[in-house]
Image (tube, rainbow, N blue to C red; front, side):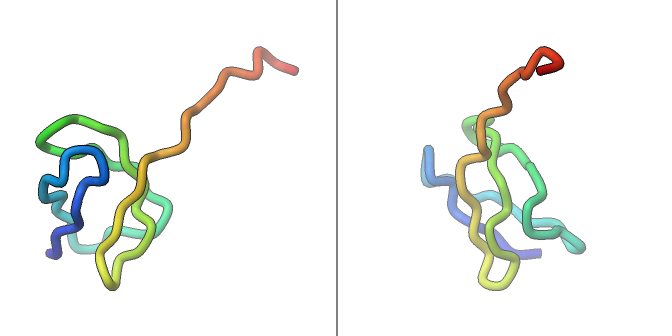
Length: 56
């Protein structure tokens, strides 16, 4: 298991074994939703905001 750094609070975000790029996780310190940008080296970025399309 490796740790990435949260871009919001600079806290440690552990990446579990088997984690995949594009997976959405939360920072254990601040709760920010993050997207795994890279597994090796471990890197996360802010998750894209999900917008409702209301069936359009």
